[in-house]
Length: 127
Image (cartoon, rainbow, N blue to C red; front, side, top):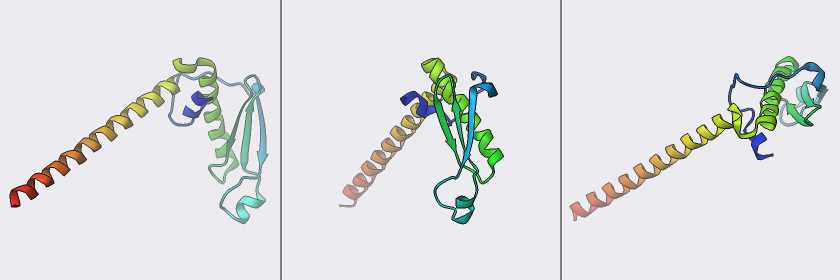
């Protein structure tokens, strides 16, 4: 299950193909902010991949067609992760972005420490 959380983050080209016969699609009412527009329209897409049992719910836009497309992309990435695991491009991209983020945090922390030391030295020089 933790692997599936990496899906929906990046664009990958080497993904497993999905056929429409493997998919079960429903349109339901979305939730969240939006008032009457959200409460009266069924533009939230629930897409299920029957062989793996993976379910994706997408309500990112007001358009049902755009939500269908986005849901298929996310489902394709999740199915790819499900079958390929750590060999999946999606997983590799997620790991690379996490590593890059950690490196950025580390550099920011070092810079902050450097600035602190410089400020302390300047105050000592004034005394």
